[in-house]
Length: 213
Image 1 (cartoon, rainbow, N blue to C red):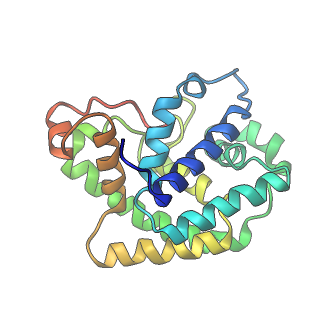
Image 2: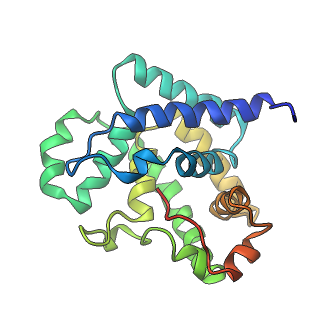
């Protein structure tokens, strides 16, 4: 059996922490089916965290621990913020429970802007895979379409500390300047988890992956 590295353990620990928080999120329509699917959850979340540095991982893990010490659930906060454009009336009822994030908005929007470009690239290059995911932009949000990739990402980033966001922005901008696509790397990790040898093989087989969480 291969020995698990400290980095791999940290990525798993983060996903485990998030999973436990996810279990405590109460949906207005009852428990969501994805809350009973740990395999998909862990594959998706670990695929995302695998693309970032140990410094980002340690910073975010500390965010989780600090939030838990304060009695906050970062996963609840993420999904609550996503409701602003899909269920605005319900959002108004819970927004008072969300912390002020005004200082984070500028940094978050810089990260979101790059991810939107990366997402458009994925739609051009891997349309079958990308079509399995969320709609792309907040303008497309609605009760029928659900929350977009843009709204999901923004909602999640707003739960991070400024320390984590600044590290994430730096790595996002560095990757962008090098012509790299971290979203592509994330989805490539997902395809490997599901047994594909490459994005190209998964694309050829019509993107037979579960929808994004």
